[in-house]
Length: 295
Image (cartoon, rainbow, N blue to C red; front, side, top):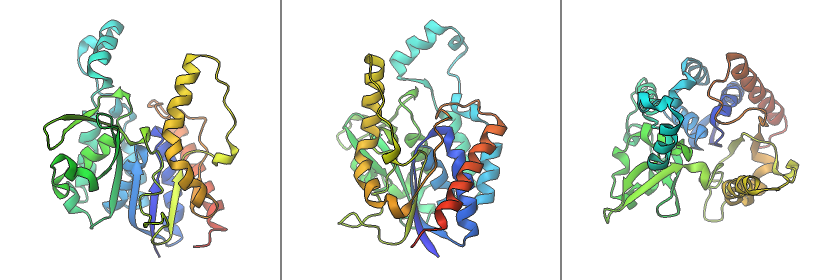
């Protein structure tokens, strides 16, 4: 049976998606269209390119998390230089190594540009900080005078994964020649369950969403005691507020919640045992969910 799929952001927590995909595939479901933000964009691009759950697991097992931490230059070992560079470059790491890995991996299925994918098969969410806008790639690339069909899928994924201050923003130039800085889609929509809806916001075909957190109604109020707590609260609210109304609309029937709060999104030194645990959690949560899913 053909369905659509949406995958949330969550950094290295995305290993949980591997277990979820194994279960979905075993149940006979196939994805016609997929969308994702950040870690979800990685998985969605692999699915759209024709990778099976087994192949995705193999690629992610072989991927070194150190790919996310490509060093700019030898002077980076000095903290002062590191933070001065962060001030001007707006990111600790370039992200080039990750993009190269993504490009090489996708090419195993002959995918380089969006024209290499089935029409409308993949939607990747990113954020344009210069314009204060969310962008859906490839749909919105025309706003920058870019032919969507000729745009690199790996670069789109790299944009969606550009966690502010961790990765350098990716520049795009709009039709007026103005430089726009593109960062992680999770800044504005960490879980784009809305992307495949019709004019009323309802899905066009059965879909499954995979959210790397617990249900929103189980969230606890976080105490805000200082400016650091306030900043964290502002950032979290900014990430989740846009998606909340869509999640509340579909949560009861279409979203697999995978609580993995014990792992930090940027824990790129995750052990193999930790990865296996994430896969296990994703698998178990999806098995439980599908027992009562009425599509």
